Length: 597
Image 1: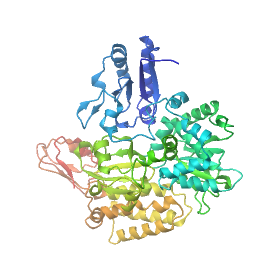
Image 2: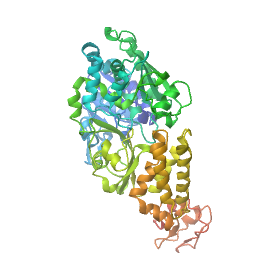
Image 3: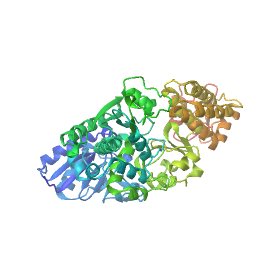
Image 4: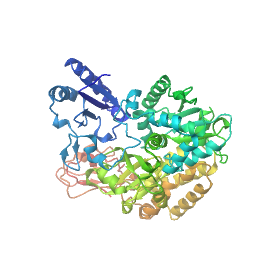
């Protein structure tokens, strides 16, 4: 075994990779060889650290120094000063905006991490996901060993039942109960399926787990297979996740070589193996029956239930389906026990939840919080608040299937039942933050447009009903809304929720219904006053030049429609009949003299 006096952990998740972390890692490797440090320093490509806003991220241990926004040209200084001479390069360290001080200690000392509890993400950013030995060193496959050597299938299911773990894919169905149904079903063959078809806009939770800790999912699927009597598993993952797919392939190969997948696992007599199936990017394939149809080589369309997958699923055999995050909890529940898991979160929503925090927020990234954490804590304590001192307006949870939570509900605890009560939902974990500049009517239109585009078209309520709703929203944001439109939207939304075939259609109206409920005045301003209160909808905007104008003529020179007239050193005027509302004049004006009304 090799021992190193220091380790340099470099984020190798998709976000940092797209920002050049691969070149940074390559430069580190070159520099430590140059200085003869390759026997003393280990460079580790990890998964996502979570704080994507600070990427590319590099952490140097044992000091735990957190370097942020690292560039290739910064590497030489980190190596020559920190790794060679032991002097931290302070100007490259992470600056905590909330505390106003530099952080040189562990990752957990940064405000972004302090209210988090990492169970699902415990190994992400900590280990090399392409090295099974590192996973094993952090208690990897310990849960599988415990299950295969000292537990019966029914005992495993009972532990999961007692833990209170609910499906993290969106519906929140009790995981143990799902396993129990599959175990009770009779069939010549049973299947275990991992749903990694993460399609919500702004969601990247499952991707990050697969990129940073793939063995946790393999171990959990094997445990679940043992519990329900399945001998074959499939991971259905988006083809748009090449890093995740590559690391899964490596992990499966390593697990087979170590005897942790395949025949007679750990000498227990239990056989279980896993295959990968790539999805083509259809959002509807996140629905379990459509997903199974896709694995079978058919068009990804949902079917009516019952029969449920536990009775008649993949290839008409009993099948259990859970998503990535649900599986990632299993090894820790087995190791630490059901009572440990229940001690985290709330009575009806136990454990933690991973969210992809995005939109108008300072600390964009991946967060894992105990269930019951207040929304205010997520937005301000973890997320660092809204950029530019803007006012928080709303947050969309649950992706296109969820709803918008307004500012007056900032102190609501984040858990399954409370979100449902206010017209939103947990979903898989997307959390898109909006500020005062966002138009809630246009936000609703954006999510509904996504759903319309992704509808498989099988059932009439979803295929036609959502399109009629989108047409009404299009009219409203273009200044052509009429009295009665809101009532039509509400009636259509309720009917679609009641009659659509699958979860995609049943939840598609949620963004519209929730924004009408909490921001009705904004809809009414669009319809009655032909005005967008957020000054966002172009068709309802007019540009005006105020008394601040110095007559510099800069705006007139860039106007593509020749809509601005005036003489030098005198206030100019915009002809609103000619103005095409491109905003070029606003961008060019140095005096803030042009307003949108």
